[in-house]
Amino acid sequence: MRVLRAFGRFWYDFLIGERPELFVGPLVTLALVWLLVRAGWPDALAGLVLVGGVMVVAGIALARSLRPRR
Picture 1 (cartoon, helix red, strand yellow):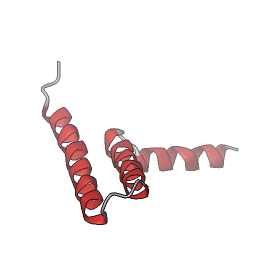
Picture 2 (tube, rainbow, N blue to C red):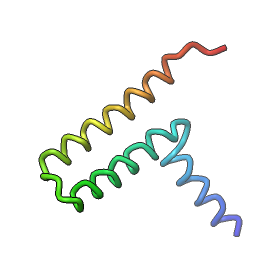
Picture 3 (tube, rainbow, N blue to C red):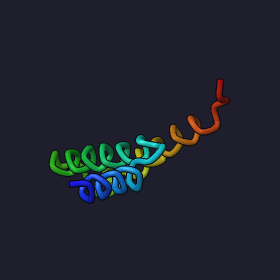
């Protein structure tokens, strides 16, 4: 059980780490793009939504990291 818990902690730290928005944001963006494609949006437009969504998430993470600490 200890090995399993250590394995889970490793993957949590590897995937999420200090910036959970960099893990959750692209997953949410991918889900949104999947829904748009299933709704009949053109693939190129859905691709632009994907790129824009990932850029927004990266911008939010960058802004949070540059914010002065209290």
